[in-house]
Amino acid sequence: MSKVSPKRCRTYRYRLHPTVHQSQALTSQLHYQCELYNAALEERKGAWNWEKRPVTYFNQCKTLTGLSDVRPEVISSGVTLCRGTLKRLDRAFAGFYRRVGTGENPGFPRFKSACRWDSLQWEDKGGWTVKGAERRLRLKGIGEVKMNYYRPFAGVPKVITVKREGTKWWVSVRCVDVPALPLAPTGQEVGVDLGVINLVALSDGELIEGSRFTARSSKRLADAQRRLANKQPGSNRRRRQVEEVARLHRRVKQQRLNAAHQLSRRLVNEFDLIVLEDLKITPMMARPRLKPNPETPGNFLVNGAAKKTVLNGSIHDAGWGQLRSLLSYKAESAGRTVVVVNPRHTSSTCALCGHVDKKNRVTQAVFRCCSCGHEDHADSNAAVNILRAGRARLASASVGPN
Ligand SMILES: [Zn+2]
Image (tube, rainbow, N blue to C red; front, side, top):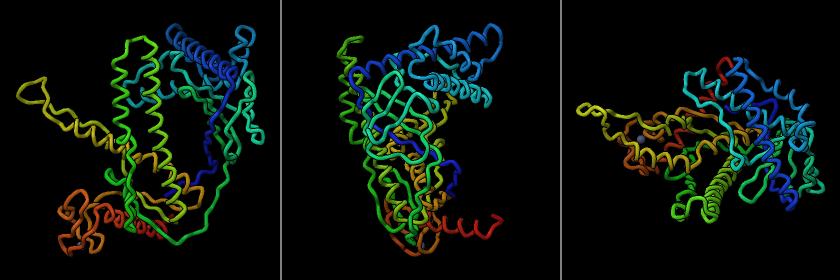
């Protein structure tokens, strides 16, 4: 069931068009913040190694006040920016301690290289203002940066992140207390089967072809990778080719996100109830366990890892997890219900008579019931079962104690 969050958050992303001067200032600020991160990490490491004393985020924030005397340029874009950098380090440590706590073997937070540091985060209000009417983002110490403010954000802006991607700059504005935008009921309900071959099958029989962006761009990517491998290490041409490969990857990512946004918007607009399978994506994406060969110790038998890797690629390509999260936040804001059901037997049950048999599924695409002879596309059949399971869950929830 969709969660109702009292503090509804949303992030809005806009393209920035800094002048040459502003982009130089932003780049210098990237260097300073990276330096600050590394210095703060050094402090935490030192305190731990020599005095066994933990240093917290709040301890480190306090030392920022002295920074304006020694390194004024680091703090020139506001103390909130420096706090954002310290927060980032704090998150790295929190993740490290959490993994230590769960018995994993995590790596200690590492020093960052300045050439990989590409974002600035202002942790709170102060140091920045969004001037919507003038389509400008005012950044302390940088100036008024031209911003493609194509749509206004809703709610209260809280945190901003300015990011460099290749030669482009972007700003993400995180807002809290975003008001809901309820939609009028349509009286329609849908079950959604998320597949690898067809991205999505709906219970009304519609099949929505996944565009498989990686698959489509894989040749271009492979070509770009090959050209990269032929370049001299350390050369300018190699550096440019690295950027080209990164650009292709970013484009695929953006196309995939766009498709997921459009599909989730369509489903939320058309249906009051949306039922999905609860696919535990992480275990499905996990690598299969190694199979030791009992005859020759130290050797391993075929475990299907290569096949699994291909499947993982397709799962990732279809963007399951992304679609689900976009769907749930849009549904929550629109007042729609999203129900997640156990996927067990949904693909082997006949949607017409309820007969359960693995043999019902003739191929990946064809479903033919052994009992009543009902024939359908396998994914559409599963979608009908998913919708039925979702309605049953809703019915039992409304009768139950809650
Ligand atoms: Zn049947």
